[in-house]
Length: 167
Image 1 (tube, rainbow, N blue to C red):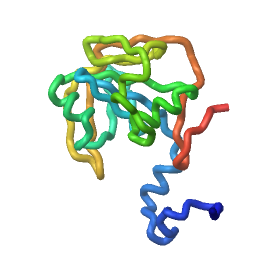
Image 2 (image 1 turned 180 degrees about the vertical axis):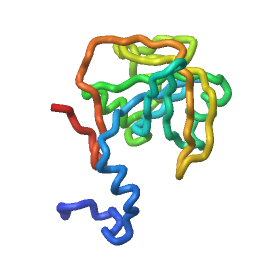
Image 3 (image 1 turned 135 degrees about the vertical axis):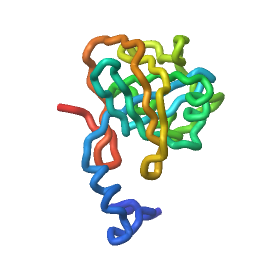
């Protein structure tokens, strides 16, 4: 068995997208979006805009189960994940197996906007207000209709292709 110092499957440096490399150098919050169905997806391209009303924007895969569920229900949840939620984030990103389905391994509470993981005390319930193709993804806009704010906990962040802890 050979151990490589770098990823043997990575694209050569000269073939890598400079835009993707720039995006990788911006620290991103890791959030979990869910919708009735249930469906869910880890999203690290998300933004909350304060205003009247407040808005949530996110880039998601237009072929994801989450998008199908959001489009059908017209509503969804957004919850920032904690540093302790790395496996959950990987599972909902499709990077880790989910025997029996994404929602089977953990306790969830049902809300009008979709399931929320028990113990996630900070989350928003949103009504879908728009979507459009944006780059390689789908820009989804939601109006924030409900917010629960829990205690400050170490947020899960994504930087340079890995989860990082804020210090």
